[in-house]
Length: 51
Image (cartoon, rainbow, N blue to C red; front, side, top):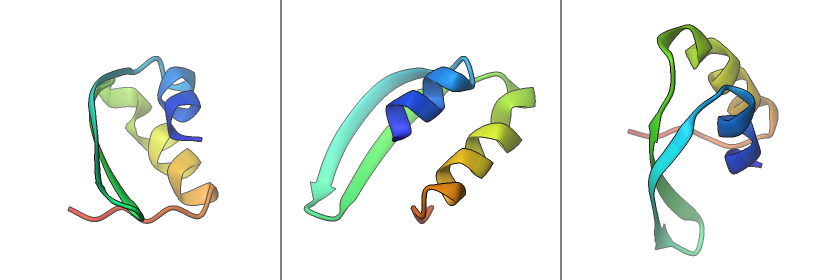
């Protein structure tokens, strides 16, 4: 899900790390105007954002 969500928002995945079996960390670069679309896509898939 996430890689396609980033691509749909014209984003780049700069780094991806698995933190645990249920947690991943992504470092991304996207245009500011795409933040809402990306957030909606992530939340719509049922994932949680923690930071």
